[in-house]
Length: 273
Ligand SMILES: [Zn+2]
Image (cartoon, rainbow, N blue to C red):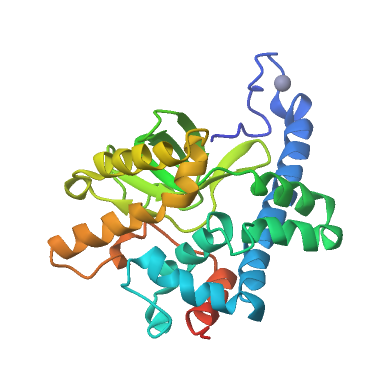
């Protein structure tokens, strides 16, 4: 987004110089934004740390092969790359139902809310209700703003992503979760993507799974279904990688994770029962 210079005309069309018009107001908004941004990054890291608690070790070991379709399990978890570990834990925290029927983010919010700042509380509360991981088509982009269309529902989103579109081309698909941060949507963690040649029948697979799920759970929403089946997107990506005879998932990373998150991810990759 282009900001006017101090002496440029204000963007509001008043005819005044920016510094005499909306500059101060914009700066306030920006400051608030950066506070919320910082709170969101704190929650991202804190959720990862929380997920590594010893009491979730068994659930971690049991759920690894579910997410990775046996590609990783407790015996080779330390071989996950950092982005792989981040994506796994994102699913483990947001979508995976623990034995008591709760998700980790729900437990986090319940136990930690009182220790959080007001900005952090707002993020945590919103993220409990964030949607499931899904599949999004990149339909347009400008700098760090991406236009994404849910490949399964058609719903459209404007999303901020610090790393821009990474390696993703228009029409290709991103496997990710969208979370609200202040007044815009962001990706919850490092995304994976499906190159054009590897999209193949992913939609048909998901639709078949949904039909079966709805037959058993007629009142379930699309989000309910996706929470329980978003790992099928990863299974599809793994299979396509295998069909292309290349090492799976490592190239699915459009971009960076910040250094602190990477450090935590390295720790998690070593986390064993
Ligand atoms: Zn103005």
